[in-house]
Image (cartoon, rainbow, N blue to C red; front, top):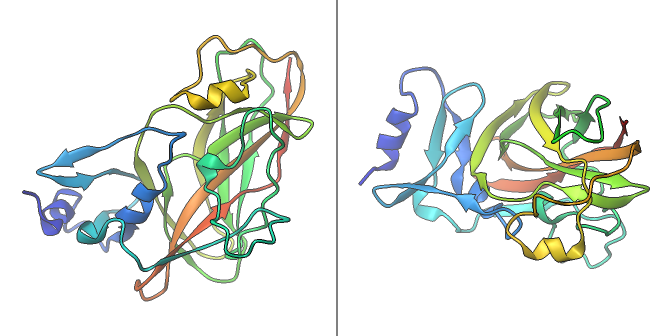
Length: 244
């Protein structure tokens, strides 16, 4: 059976100080809207790590344990103790795009998609995560954000379907940014499609026009001493895109 030290060595021992990835927190972010494919090595759950630097896997014996807290909330929610939504569960087909309060850390997302044909199989672009706060941020996130296509504030399509569970290392000083590749399909989904593991391939195409694209990302942030982590739901303003 692979031990934690074995995994650390396989991921690049001797290549410099490792960045930490809280494996338990990353795995807990997988919800019913995304079916994670996990790989087991000798009974120990592992995941691929995206990004620059060497990753060390920590907390293998405490997956699903305690020690983390959550922040961020949907604007207008006065419940106080309500569970914070995840990026994967934020928007539903045919429902209004959720308004989320800015992340307390100062992290924010900006989407960048160039004009495209409405008949395109998919539209590719990028999403930039920026630390607009005053403190350094170290932690991890999914390897790509959740993208929502909307019209007049109503969700037309969102990221869905099976995905390989990966983590991107987040290590941002104030003012620094990192960029994720992103994509969306110019189609319209319905509430009935939400019950599927992934949307059908023959969803109705959107008509030419101007639409809004937004992104959401769960970021697991470590405390400076590494003793605790918290999850933040990070979003940003929607960006207009022209589909012609």
